[in-house]
Structures are given as C-alpha cells and as structure tokens.
Length: 110
Image (tube, rainbow, N blue to C red; front, side, top):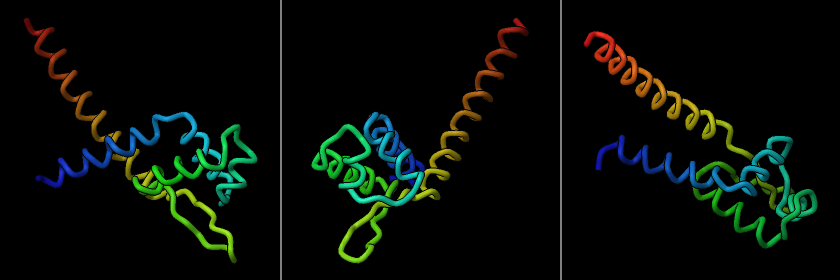
C-alpha cells in the first residue's frame, strides 16, 4: 500500500468524522478551550454518553487528544491535524483546478 493511499484513507476517515454535525459542534466548542465530556454535555444538547462516543471517534482520527487535569480528563483539539487536513484538501482542489483548466483549454481549441 502506497503512502498516498494511506494518506487518502486517513483523509477519508477524518472527513467522515467531521461530516457528523454533533462532532463538528464538539470541535467548535473545544476550539474555545479544553473541556471534559461532562462539560461538553452541559453545553451541547447531547447526552454525556453520546459525547463520549463522538469524542472516541474524534480521538481515533487524531482530531482531539486527552489532557489530565487532576482527576478530570479533558479533551483538546489537535490543531496541527486540522491544518494538515486542510493542506491535503487544498492540494486535491488545486489538482482538480489544473485538470479542469486543461479540459477547458482542449475544449476551446477545438
């Protein structure tokens, strides 16, 4: 399996994780600061159990990490992972722009 295939698989998993509205809300809330699953459940219209499941998905794809604060476990957004994903998506978009420009040039020359 090539590195590109692995990267694309990771990108697909991340997009799947980001494509769920509750997980997006969790990331947005965590963007304001670290929070525990209980704190997230108090600020979002979702049960703590559901929050925990969503956090597990986000953690699995590397979008959040755990931070211990005494006996409490808080979650933090991994900004570098989001930035890397944005760069990969931008590279895919640029490749499509290049291909479309080539198609346009061919079509206009006919």
